[in-house]
Amino acid sequence: MLLFNPVVLSVIVMSALCLLKLNVLISILIAALVAGGVAGMGLSGTISTLIGGMGGNSETALSYILLGTLAVAINHTGVASILSRKIASLVNGKKYVLLCFIA
Image 1: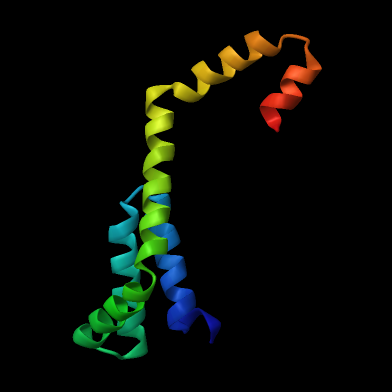
Image 2: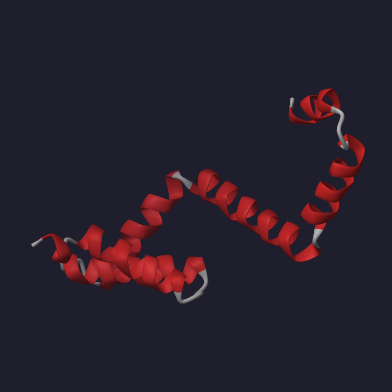
């Protein structure tokens, strides 16, 4: 049955935990433990596989974490709305100036 596939089940668990606004890293760890348990790997096998899999992709994972942190910081500070108002006041009917901003 597809629902008992460890990968599918871990994605469902991780999505549900993230929708419940649990921290993403904690959601990943819980989803990995659920997938390992369903696959019959045991706790030590699950943890070693998780660490081994993350080891090769640590730069990519760190980039995603930092990008998410930057997006949250921009949202909380209100910089995006300030910047958009500033650009709108500068452009104000000048289509070539808008084209330069987009470029």
